[in-house]
Structure formats: C-alpha cells, structure tokens
Image (cartoon, one colour):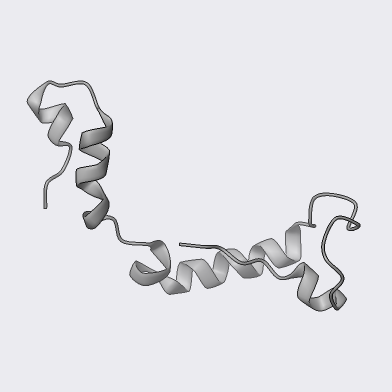
Length: 71
C-alpha cells in the first residue's frame, strides 16, 4: 500500500495524489463495524436532529429520526 506518497517525495499534495489513493480507502463500516454501531447508539442517545423538523418529507416519526451515512 502506498502511504503518504506526496509527503515522502517532498511534494505538495495534489488532486492527482488524492485520486490515486481512492482505491486504497476502506470505509469504517467495513473495517470496524462495531465502532460504527457504538457511535450510532451514542448519537441516538446523546444528540437530537438539527432543524425544526418541518423541512423533512412527511414520514413516520421513527423513520425521520434515523440516521443514514452514505459511503
């Protein structure tokens, strides 16, 4: 795995470096799904949704409170 290619080459980080690194990125829900579950549970018990609740499309209350993270 190529790590910190720009840094080790003494180069400024560019979009090309970032684009080349994309295939190496592994989402946390794949590498540590238990951490994602713990984080989601903590969020559900310690946070509340932002906004006034009127901007979401009409849906049952339980569904509107669920968080979905796209990866």
